[in-house]
Length: 141
Image 1 (cartoon, rainbow, N blue to C red):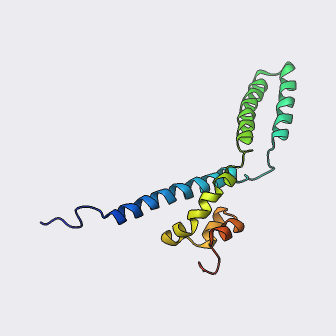
Image 2 (image 1 turned 60 degrees about the vertical axis):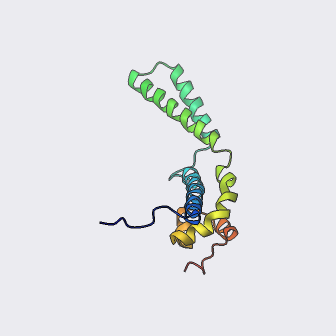
Image 3 (image 1 turned 135 degrees about the vertical axis):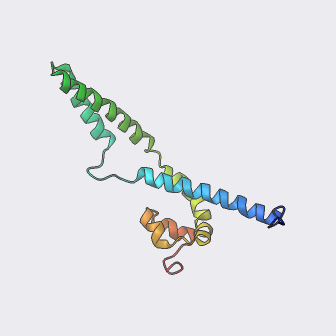
């Protein structure tokens, strides 16, 4: 049985594959940043609100408590410290940092993959960013 297909890829095909990988990395990074910074359900946590709760916990831990209550407060303090670190890390706007690269490749990536304006919006990409990328509702309707 004879082998099928080309024995090697053309330079144009290799360049197109490399471009697709690059665009995919840019798109994935931007969408991950959006997902990480999306607010969760419930009241939003700020650094101030977390610090206030940490102060209350530290004050409560000074009192003589039931061992189980103390254990629960210690665990809450650990979780709040992690939350505070996450809030502080997100204070630098990662989405805005990645936005120019996303704008540069989003239109060609979306056209190649068949991604509609509605899908971008539902994921959380702002209308202003899509407009800057040249993606419109009309073109993908």
